[in-house]
Amino acid sequence: MTDWCDYFYTIRRVCPWSWASWRKGLIDIDSWEGHPKPLDEMDARVYIAPNRKFRILKKIAKRMNDQFPNEEWLWSHPDFENNSTEVPVLIQQDRTKLAEARRKSPF
Image (cartoon, rainbow, N blue to C red; front, side, top):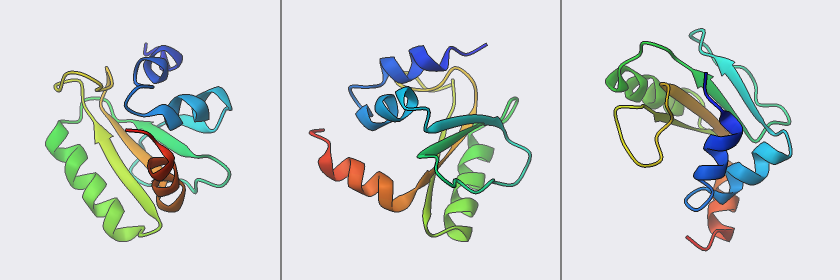
């Protein structure tokens, strides 16, 4: 079982807005069922996609980015080191909010 609080804390140096959003309850953790949910008031949604290879996650993220131009879709997989999640995930974010957070970030 992933300790999401610990995960967002550990990546705060490379993704400080995710730690702040997590502490405010603005990141939802859900299971990937093949289709996204509206973000509504959430800053991001992390979809757990167990048993998915990173190539499949990458293809899904590309398809979602093409299909939903107002959102940015990313993926993370435990096969990669450093700041990767310990389970395969897709990450759904509002493109405008993310761009603003990146603009304000010192990194």
